[in-house]
Length: 438
Image 1 (tube, rainbow, N blue to C red):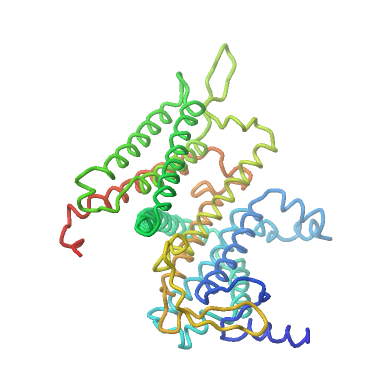
Image 2 (tube, rainbow, N blue to C red; image 1 turned 180 degrees about the vertical axis):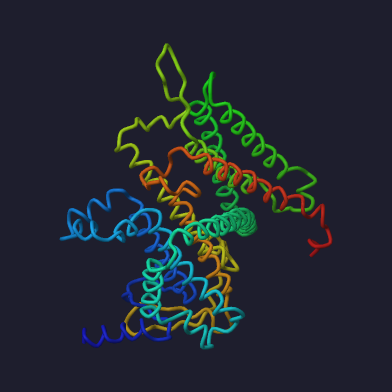
């Protein structure tokens, strides 16, 4: 019976049906969610490999543990291309091509029963083989220097577009979160208490971040940019918070509250902190001794502290990218926070495994093509982030949060773009009233 079960699961991976390879004790899963999860798993796998390739210890481990690796590399130059920034560019090139192909392949797919939809929702083993082939094929591209130079600018442009999508998603999520929880107050007053509590916690985190950066990332005799930008970003967060509850905005948007600016403020403070951490360290001379100022207080310069900061930054990177890719392509990105849920779905059980809810019988609930296009941009964003954007040639993953002016300005500009997006959502009904009429 075990052999039969394995054969069924293998056929599922190679076939066109959306199957479940989990046991029946697992909770039921929607077909659309399972599909997006599998693509996210592919994306995460390649991203982890890219992070490993950027580690300078990988090449040394290969030399120590793989027989004849050192002698082979002395005769051939391809060993150097197996690690470092060039390897990340080639891996991400293959992943980007994979998702770009499916973005073009699934254009105008509105029915989940068609041939192209079946390929999108199934054939997981075959698609994994294709993804591996695309990533490996990137290492055999001719004219490596020209490719890396051109692909760098393409990656920078695509990564910036992905960052804009991520910021728009955050603003949309903040509005939907407040709207959904505010609607729950009509049925249960406990939702009002939950809304107030979460808002208070978020504002406390934002204010705490301002105090923390004011204490540790500013100095009376140095760090002028930190003082200016911390004051600007903190003031802008205060302005949008007051504007969100102003009478003129409340009249046009009754659901506008303090939860949205609280979410935006926390994210802006995170980007500000990340920008300060990415800025090159400033040296101040005291009594003839050079002293580093405006640095992370818990980073004493030891290797263990650097690794902790790198791990936290990498986890945040993975979380932001995967969250953006998965939620920015759904029509109800905040479904998990809804007060009222719709359970009217046809349910089927695949073999003896996990229950699969086929929620796309009447039509697709998200855009397949846009979903893959976001993953395509996400591939470029990962490539640029892991290689520290334009400073890729001397960058290592262990120095992800160390000094880089390009990263500093990119993250600081992201703060302002996020605030502009949210500010526009507040004043848009006043500027274009006809477009927002019910």
